[in-house]
Length: 299
Image 1 (cartoon, one colour):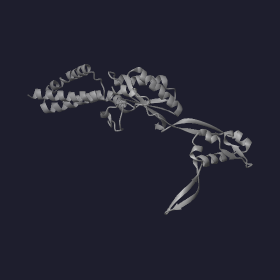
Image 2 (cartoon, helix red, strand yellow):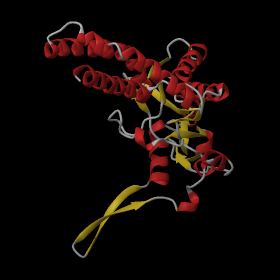
Image 3 (cartoon, rainbow, N blue to C red):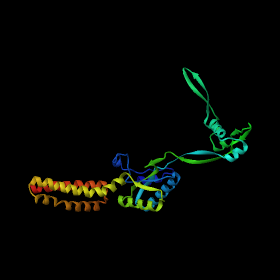
Image 4 (cartoon, rainbow, N blue to C red):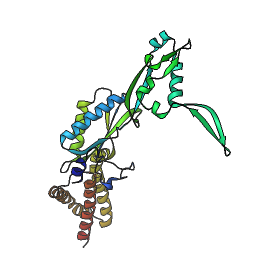
C-alpha cells in the first residue's frame, strides 16, 4: 500500500521500503535482502551499466524498490583551452587560468582589520555576472602584446552533471545496486536472476560482487548443512555420555528428520520462503525437538 502511494507522488524518488529488523544485522547499517556491487574503471560507463541493470531487474518481477547509490549532483562547467588557437593570438594557458580564477573564484588582494580580528579581502565579479556558463565566455584575457582577447575565442566551455561521491571497492570504482524481494518470491531466485542479468549486461573488465544480506544467504547455503551435521554429531556424543548408551541417543535424534518435514510444510502453508531467518528458525526448532525427545526418553 505504501509503495503504491509513493509511486503516485511526482518527482519523488523512493529508496525502498525497508525492514527495520535488518538494520545493523551485518554490522554495516541498513541492509537490503538483495545487494550487489558492480565494479569497473570508467565511471560514466559504469553509470550506464547500472541503469541497464536496474531496468532489467525491475522487468523480472522478482524484486521491488530497485535502487542504487549512483546519484547525480549539481552541474559543473568545464573550461578547456584551445591551445592552438590561443597560441595564434598570443594567449597562454596560464593567463586563461588566472583570469577565470580571479573573475569567478576571486583572489585575495589584502586584509582588513576591525575589532581585533583580521579578514581577507577578496575581489571577483558580482554574482549576476558569474552565475551562468555564458558569463565565462564574456570574459577577456590579455595576450602577450597587452591586447584584450575574448575568452570565448580561445576556450571551449561545456556543462555536464557531476556525481556527489565516487565509491570504490577493491581499488575499482563501484556502484551498489539494492532492492527488496517481491512479495511471494524467493530471495534465492531473485539473487540468481540478478547474476544472470550481470552476465548478459556487463562487458569484459566489469564485474559484480554479492554483498549485504545476499552474501550472507550465499554463505548460509553452505554453512547451514554443516551446522546441522555438526550439531547432530555433538548431540549424539553428549547424549551417549549422559545415558551411557548408544541406543538411547539414536532414539532421541530419530525425531529430528520429522522436525525438518514439519518446518517445510509450515513454511509452505504460511508462504514463508527459505531465507536466513527461516534457516535460523529450523536450527532452533531442531533444538526444541531434541529437548522434547530427551524428556520423553528420560521419563
